[in-house]
Image (cartoon, rainbow, N blue to C red; front, side, top):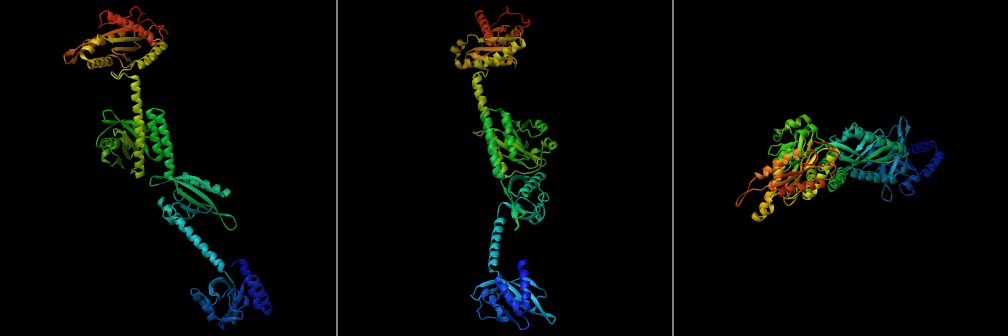
Length: 615
């Protein structure tokens, strides 16, 4: 009963006890307030009541003015009867409000009554109880419905996969459902009374949560944001929604927090975006190291504490070379610049050997790292798992590895992620290989693997420009194999191809790495010797001519020898492109042919080799 109802009950009781006239006023007041009045005479064990009370509230016949207490007790609900019987035997010594019971209405249904009891004293003891009562059935039904809704709400809350918590305005936890146990080792009851910071949240997460709650407290508006929390070294991303809760006076009372884990969806969205960015890099022909490092960064964003690396298989398949992984310490990258492939060669070398994923959850304890753990130990690397990278035709290309600074094993999701990354790496490597192959086809002679005519002219023009700009010497050699048509006609084109390849190999052996050599077509070759004067170039040309003349190739009819004629011309100060120098060298070549072949002709009348050059 409310405070106002209690005061009214006391007033009515006082009027009732003062006399007949006052009782009439009391009855009128009771009827106006929808209240009833009962008097329990404890000495006579009799109940008297107003007509309004007995008839209108309880449905008793109009002639009923009272009944004995025994009959009254039979009208009460069996569950309430013992308690009220005890009250009649041991009446309260002081006024008592809010006494509730169920009583059977005359029509047969149950009504809830609420009583405010006032004891009457006579001869030093309570002789009677005056009760102001009212029917509260509607309220009790409403409360029961509310309790059912509350129970349904609690059932939904307790079985929700979301973490649902209630905080006071000081951010102490008042309630939290059991879903929190999936992400916290703290027992459920120990969350109560603690702030997020006291529950072990990171400083960054606690600060963000406190800031968002302050915003809600200041403007009473719901908030939504994301937080990252960790459990067992695993990152969990939560979408947190904060809702204000108000009391009956409309004042902010508590904050309801609904926290939904969105790790998989957020990481999936981020992974898809980053994969698209990598594929764009691949399609845009970005440098391979840049693309591979981007893949490592992409994987590290999915595994924040992981350090990723990519190693590529050498052509001979005996070793792996470090290709990407900028998050690893530079000194460690140098230590693993080249790793042997073998059955006990760390994580990467072993994965390449067995061609399957190798998981090492503790480098210090693993026999696979027995010969290499001293490399990882100074850098605090404790775990490493490696996955082989295969081409579309299942050729081994390399390995992808993830390191951690604490001993740990990968989750199934992390292994699946590593496997997924190897497909993207394979795409990048195969695209790079195809680009290299296309470049070779476009720039190299397929028979000799020297520069083809187009590539040679392009590179030679650059050297001429550099020579002109730096006022440095440059000499060109034009070379043609003697009687090559006869070799083809007499011994066949296959042997002719062998002769072409043999000469190309001699060029590689005699010329410097900085020299440029190319096959211009058929049996015609050219070489550019940067920073070389004519007299020095003639020495090189003679070594090449002599090596050719001394060579013998086996054939079905015995050994075959061949010779070469060479024309040598040094760039003149006025010459600004390779065609001019080649033209002079070509004329000198044919002079050598006309002079009997197997010889070198040079323009000795050109400016002296030691004369200064100008652009």
